[in-house]
Length: 162
Image 1 (cartoon, helix red, strand yellow):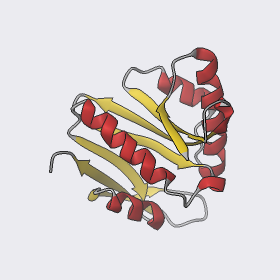
Image 2 (tube, rainbow, N blue to C red; image 1 turned 90 degrees about the vertical axis):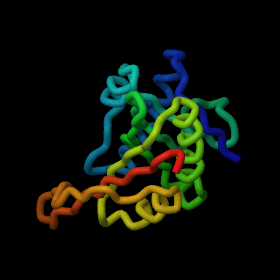
Image 3 (cartoon, helix red, strand yellow; image 1 turned 120 degrees about the horizontal axis):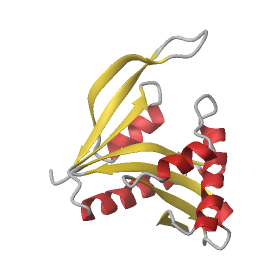
Image 4 (cartoon, rainbow, N blue to C red; image 1 turned 90 degrees about the horizontal axis):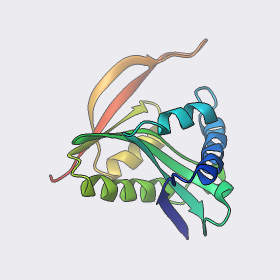
């Protein structure tokens, strides 16, 4: 059983949870992890929020196992980051996060949700397609790493009310 909640604004709690998310980022995004400080600065913006997944209960705020950082601007939203700790992957956590996010966004009259994904991230693309996202744009050679071929970025969109 997992608990998915919007990030608390309680300062002590927020710091623990953001540190847990930064730790997951470092594991799942090793070349491009967002630091604790970067996450805190993003969350200071009114338009940015985060859903956090806890194992069992949230008695230990450091037990965050998944997250979705998103931005809402008027009728549009964007997933900025989504991740699950490797120990908990393949347990439908990302699907549950997206389901919860859909509910949050619809209650805020959001009309569409965007995200960007590496074209070679087949597992993520399959997840997003199951969640009724469709590719609306391709950025050629967007992701570049030394000594590796560039990888396209796919922009995917979920439209509410269709």
